[in-house]
Length: 204
Image 1 (cartoon, rainbow, N blue to C red):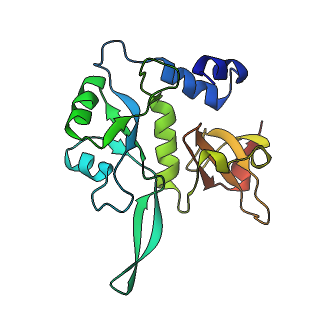
Image 2 (image 1 turned 90 degrees about the vertical axis):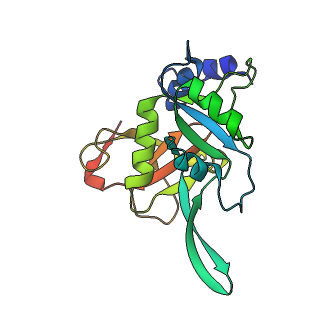
C-alpha cells in the first residue's frame, strides 16, 4: 500500500495520519533540523552499535532501550540495549545526516514506500513526547508495531496532571493488569506504554 493510499484510509485526526503527514513534509533545502528515522545494519551483538558511534561523534540521536540479562564468563550481567536493534533516530539537517551516512556504511535512511527515496521523518513535538515517555517513566514497556492489537486500544484518553500532563493517546488494555497505562506511538515503527494514575485520566 502506498503512502497516499494509507493516508486516505486513516482518520484525518489520527496519530498515524499526523506522523505520516510529517513524513510527507520533506525538507526543501536540507538546512532545517528534523528527526530522521534511520536503520542500523550492524549485528545485534556488536559492541559499538550505531547509536554509540553517533554519540561519540556528538550527533543528537535516540534509540529506545530495554534491559536484558546476559551471561558473560559465567556471570550474569544486566545490560541496556536497543529494543529494536536496527531502529534509531537522528536529529539534524539533511545535509549533515547525508555526510554521516557517507561516513558510516552500516547506517541508512528508512525511506517511505513507493517514493523516490524520500526519507521517513517525525515531527519534533511527536518525537519529544515519545522520548520523554520512554526515558522519564520508571517502567516503560515497548512494543513492536505488530504487537499492538485493536483490542488493546479501545479507549482514547487525555492525561491531566502529573509527568505526562497534556498527552493524548489510548488507554492500554491488558488482561490481568490493574495498572493504568498510556500508550504513546510512533505509528508503524514502535510504541511505548507508561504507567499513569487513574485520577489523571480523562476519557475522550
